[in-house]
Length: 247
Image (tube, rainbow, N blue to C red; front, side):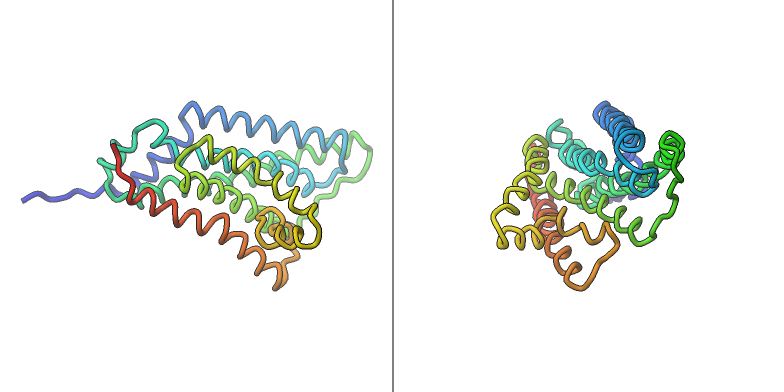
């Protein structure tokens, strides 16, 4: 009688977290993310903007909002692009557990990146105030801070969903990066275009959350956008991974 030995989820989580940290792609992406975030914060603080802690931290989120979803896409498509899915799913046939172990470290990295953005913004706020000879603004609205973090996490989840849906890194990255430009064009089409963007564009629907001014209508619009760009693509993507033949 053969006794099946199940791989503990903690082991899967540890393996996928290590993949996120020590592969060549992840190291390059992390380095680019850190460099771009520092450059944006330094440029805004010294040359363009006020000595405001929240503003400078939010500036760092611009880089995160682009690069973290791309990292998520690469994470969930790596098994297929590198043709290691057969090995991975042979060692752990329950593919849903593997997907969960891949997604959790990326979402956790999004939260940690927000914390890192605040840590970077603190000395830059002081330096900006000294250079401009003004008083630094240190106040942080908890609602705006949590909303900003939630938007970064949702953007990262959108990248994960797009990657799982397509299982093709180049296609998912192109669609993710081009989508804001397409919605910018839609908003120029008049009231109908603006209404569509408010309900279906995750960036537009998340503005109220980032500003900490969510109302009942804002919640409904955000829920619709999250359903379109996160929930539905991720659900379809999970089904694709669970049923796809591995060769």
